[in-house]
Image (cartoon, rainbow, N blue to C red):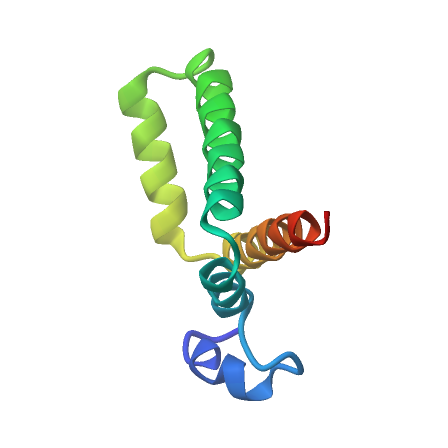
Length: 98
């Protein structure tokens, strides 16, 4: 995907938005407690991953690696980020149904 394709993603998407925009649509409509629980789960997962990586890298090296990865702007990273938005949106929707 070229860097300008994302500008038109909402227009071309069958669901009327990007994974990011759909996540925020649902998060803004859902019960606050439900969304807070979802964010707690996200932060718990993030904290666990950070602890696992900290066992192998010092803080400075880890920060440099993360920054480098984020700044690379790779399609693979963007695709994974979209997948995470979809997964987190699914988690919130599933909690709405229960």
